[in-house]
Structure formats: C-alpha cells, structure tokens
Image (cartoon, rainbow, N blue to C red; front, side, top):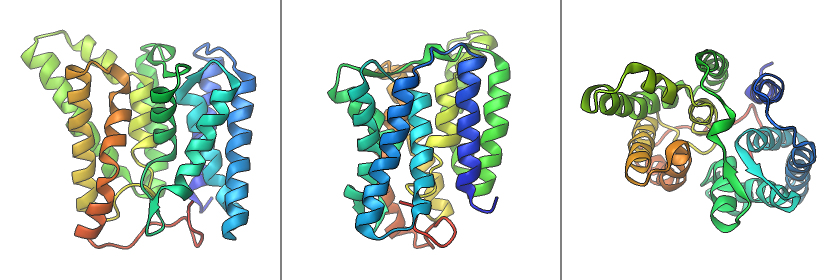
Length: 264
C-alpha cells in the first residue's frame, strides 16, 4: 500500500461505518451515494479535460468520505452542491498548480454560509473517551504515511493547549470538562484528517509549524469570542489557508506529490 491515499480511504471508510453502526448515526444512504457519485463524476470530468490519470479518483474518494462524515444536509441537491464545490475548487481555485483551499473545508464553509440546509453536527459523536484513542491511533498511522504528523502535533499543542489553560487554570473547571472537549469527533477528525491534507498545506516543515499554530490560535479565538464551538477549527482553516501561498514562497521547499501523479 505504497500510495498513502489507500490508507486514507480505508481510514475514513472505516470511521464512517463506525459512526453508522456504533454511534447510531442516521443512515442517509441517498445523500451518501450522491456525495460519493458526484465527487467521482466531477473529478472524472476534470481529469479528462486536463489529461490526468484516473488515479486522481482516489483523491475524490477521500473528499467524498470526508463530506459524508462531517457535513449534514437535508436536501439531495445540497449534497451534490457540496461535492461539486469540493472537487471543483481543486481545479478552479489554484495558484501555480497548487490548491488554495482544502476541498472538504471549502465545501463545508460555502454550503453552510450560502444555504440554509448544511451544518456540522458535534452532537453525533457522543463523548466516549474511546473515540479519542480510535481516531487518534488511526489518524496517526495516516499522518505517518503522508508525512504531516507535525501539523497535527502543533495544532494540538496550540488549540488544546490554550483550551487546557483556559478550562483548568483560568476558569478552574474540572478535568472532565476538558476531556469532553478533547473527545469531540469533529475536532479530532479535523486534527487528523482535514488540516493535514498534504496538497493544501505548506511544503517546508517550519512553514507548517507557523501554519498549524495560526489555525490553532484562530480556532481558539473563534470558539470563545464568536462562540463557534466545534466548527471553529473548520472556519479557522478556511481563513488561514491562503497564507500557504505566502509561506511556500518564504520557505522554498520541494512540493508534495502522491507517487508520480499530481494529486488534484
């Protein structure tokens, strides 16, 4: 399994099944099928237009699974819209052939912002501490495969560190409140899946540190100043993502690629 995308598909697919069968998520079969089918179709059309290998469908599959897990919608048309935004953004919003925004991130932000039918549901995860170890262990293996462990670690140090200082030392709340916050599945998947996308994050290790610290600090501000709760990291990543273009120029470094094919 040399291609790290295989592991990401297995990881996200397993977690989707875990949510449906162990966490009791409502089975939204039609929306799931529409998201997956639309992501693959849009990717296929762009791949044909640009003359890309069909292996790029793996990236579309990863995006579709991420949307199925994180984004909740009522109407099938919103599911199709989210999929089209996710895949279309990779080809239509790029600089020097590099994506500006994480596909799942921009799809969630724009469909939430411009429709009345999309949201992220933190309540679907429960608060089982076992979830922390499940997502953390699986996510760690994925990150080791794609070489972006540093981004997750610095985000954790910043975001969870600030939250720990606020909860335990400033407000004097009990430790179980902080543990409840840490075991939120949306935040965990963001930490081990969304923010670590190797194609849309800075190339240089130092640039990745600056990037992840900025996302973590802004997510903390959004959480406690704008009261965004579990959706704060998603919005923070959206705001910080364009800085990757500047950081890549400031810190010159080789660009990530999936094997020998461009990861679009």
